Length: 236
Image (cartoon, rainbow, N blue to C red):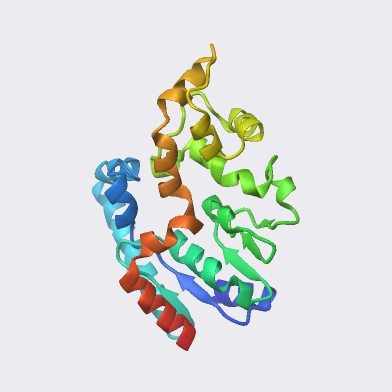
């Protein structure tokens, strides 16, 4: 709570919103292996590790409930915090001079815009539209396409085998978005990673659905939860 208050003071926040994760029914429905690696790790936990994790979740819930007495808090079963953040940015960013996202999750960099920035509580660094080039070697508009090609090991989302950040950058700079690359397939080449790209064809639109937060946040949250979110946020 002190951390929240300290950050709010630092950024002169006029409104504070706390978001919590509830899984992702949307992503699991279109890709059952989503975050499957985490489930495997959970199954391998020792009794002590499982108890410690349970204790952590209980303490997190207690803190979340206390924060809810003072600030907007949103957490829905089957909805990730990423999608709630994307929804609020998508529909409400114009109502504020600047929106600061406080998260160590780099996926939230997809939301960065002229008046939307992120502060990582882990690295203690700010990522903004102005200093984007200090963190990435490509334009912000290319970020989603590069993520689509590379996938996300942390979320168990597959990418094209043999394509890392450098090759992904080169492809996007050469062809345009990942959708433009998709429209250009198959690409004739002797290189194995291009052949892998050709075979990955149907993975491109799937990865957009899994990773493009701004485009698919409405679907990921669901109509009923959106109604609750907007009513509470607007009335607050």
